[in-house]
Image (cartoon, rainbow, N blue to C red; front, side):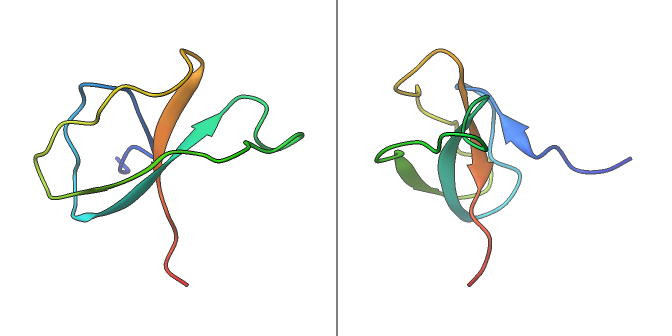
Length: 61
C-alpha cells in the first residue's frame, strides 16, 4: 500500500515538510495564491480556503 497524496483539514501530516493547497481544477486553471504551510510529522492540517481543496506535499526542487 502506498502513502496518501492528498490530505483533508484535520488529518495528521505523515512527514515533515511544506504542504500546498491543491484542488479539482488546479490542473486546468491553476490556483491563484495557494496557501502553503510547514508541518512536522503528526501535526494536523489546517482548514483550506475553499471546501473543494485538499493539502498536497510540495515536491523538492
